[in-house]
Amino acid sequence: MKIIDKPEFTTLIDEKISSEPRDVVGVQDDGEKYVFDELETADDLALDYDVTMLSPKKYIMPQRETYLEYQKSNGDYEWRAKTNPEGKVIVGIHPYDLVAIEQLDKIFIDTFKDEPYRAKRENSLLIGVNMQKASETAFAGSMGTATTDSGYDLLLTELGDRYAIEIGTLEGKEFLAPAETRTARSEEIEEVNRIEEEDIPDLFENELEFSPDELPTVLEENYDNMEFWEDYSENCVSCGTCNLVCPTCCCFSVEMTRDLDGKGGKQTRRWDGCLLEDFAAVAGDENFREEKAERHRHRLMRKGRYIYERYGDIACIGCGRCTSECVPNVADPCDIYNKLKKEMTANAQ
Image (cartoon, rainbow, N blue to C red; front, side, top):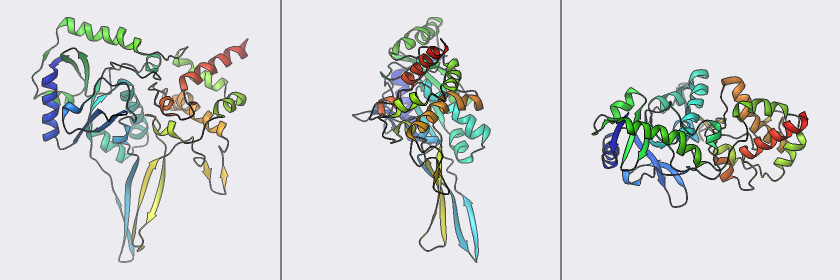
């Protein structure tokens, strides 16, 4: 573990902003919410934030992305992959968002070999920061994602006038090399451990009332509990915001558009969401999740059961974004999981 004074860290980031071929982005206060955005100066960083509106997922899985183009030439069509390999230096990622990115890596890199995702992910450098605040809707402390020992190149912990820095990769070590640092003393290492074990768990007012390991079973037992799903979804307006702000949602739709002259076109993909009414529409004017209650059930099943069964991960990392951004205030997964657990317990008696 290394120690860096705050002014030295600011100087390091400013030097990277001016010299890095990659964009340097970080958490900033836009006056209403905290957001990840391109940095003009390190002074714009707000590393003591509670939660950002969108996660850094948007840099490695953009909201809209063209990945294939074609042109007609001499009677034949020429197809070209249009992969954007540009990564970012991303500063200030909370541990739960680092966990979310690791889950996306399993899906897009390990399983589907998705080249546009892989290129941006492997060319990015992730600088995490241990939480100093938590939003009132977050429950990462219950989900085991409030701290992490993986998924970062560098991880900062605020220690007053300095940061403790854990180095996760060789690239992280090389990024830090120009700065003046020193090896952490034993009492500084103990203080970081104390913050992770005592201070951070106490940040959360919202909590799951049982172990997340039970979630797949709780959801499976309530799959046919349609009275619950209908009551819970009654006031939902099907806007899909809960999907779009989620750092682990990864569904997208694909569109092929043709140029007006008919000589070329492109294929793009954009974020999609299972709460949207047309998400499950198929040919023949059919929709296999037409009812709102079915779409809500699918969203929760996917977070707590389906992804677990396929990849071994609980795909709700407890950031609370879906709850804070939900207009009718019906999206809180922590509240839903707790109620489902009570339903299961009551039915077992």
